[in-house]
Length: 186
Image (cartoon, rainbow, N blue to C red; front, side, top):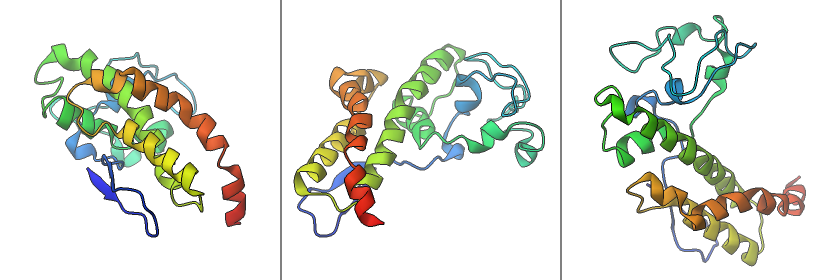
């Protein structure tokens, strides 16, 4: 977890999870969890919970990583899990992988599909705190962050709790209320 300290704020320290992807600490969950439709972003059709055929069979590296765009995988280049992949792999599954235990595959990919939107919302909320917000709005934003960070999570169920999912569902509406403060920065 990293701390976000806000100058001139009376908020307590916010303990955010890592929000930058670190593929070296993940089990290539993005290469397995999501389907690909054969489009300009993906050169192949791939089903959900199926390893990409470009994924190395001996490790979690992409065999065509250096040429993803040129080979029709711009969607892979544009993708970021916002740190959810390593959080799922390292924290929720204690470093075990679906290659170590194939029975974990669907559990790990489900966890990525639950945690990633939460991490994306945390990225947005972290940026919102940089705006010149009045204290009540800043406090609300901090409350959403603290709920979504799920600092003591030990299983995917912690992220599926009603309080967390309700906070996630409220983020778009909250972000819409920030428009006056964004315009103020121009």
